[in-house]
Length: 421
Image (tube, rainbow, N blue to C red; front, side, top):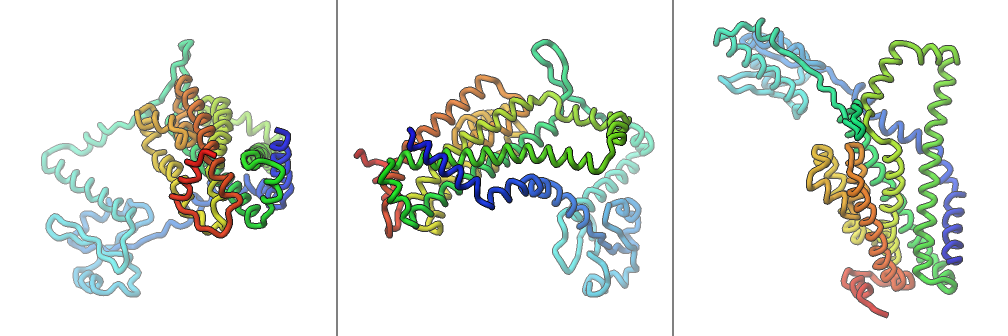
């Protein structure tokens, strides 16, 4: 046991002292914030204004169509319309909207944007629908006045009979983010273990280490050491994120401004909306479960990554073995949306019980509420899964770690697994 702790401390200290660890720990919160904010900013700045030509015969459609954002329509004579359909060069028009009997056409010298096509189709459908209602003798003003929009407020009833405001959108957002983060962390730190094994094997350092410790001890020490590195980095990211947010507030606002802001009606309303958005979500449970599923999911997958690293001589040879390992994780990512649509369904239940998919799927389900017995079974199954995969990975590791210059196949791996020596 002492030897395992020596390997753990070595793996931990070597990686924590690296400049890359320090740099990524500092830049991690900044990069994560940029990853979330940048796409929104870029999409807002990338809103292209498009000009579409329409003929005089279709002028009845002009006013409703001009209400489409970032798209303008210009009526042109029929003669110009016919010429434009043949040559778009230097006209400034994005497309031509034409109608032949009951069929509408968008003609352009480039592929039409899907959003433009949908928005125009939706508007034309509403125009035709209103025309049919007019012909039927229905008063459109009465119809408009009868249109009603409602907002359904969801509430969760607690065991003591208290009603708490909740939000499906908030639960979906938290579930999606935590599921994606679990996937990223498992994959990132799992491949770190694999690269470490390949590096030691290539440099022949492992031959010296194996003379003092057993292969299983070396594998477990490396896995747990990297796990502690990931845990340390994750905790530091949380602390730094809160510290940066607090520092930004202090730099941007004076103490008096912060007090006045906190007491302002707008801020009170915003806090009320945030409370409603995250109401009914047990953040302590989610944080604790996130730590558990991150560690257990990492331990399960890292043992397999370590086995792959021991079976090859170079990172380029790992691709054929990594794909089958990562398929369950990729499947879990693909199932996030169906699970959020029906978090209590059969698919969501079983995917959160299977050890290879439960780290992602259970984190997606948790904000919607999960029975304690389901959570316990899921946790037990992933622990059992980790023990099983570690047992199998150790068989591959002890043989592959000292094997050089041979291209390993699945048949060879099966021999190592079935060997009872």
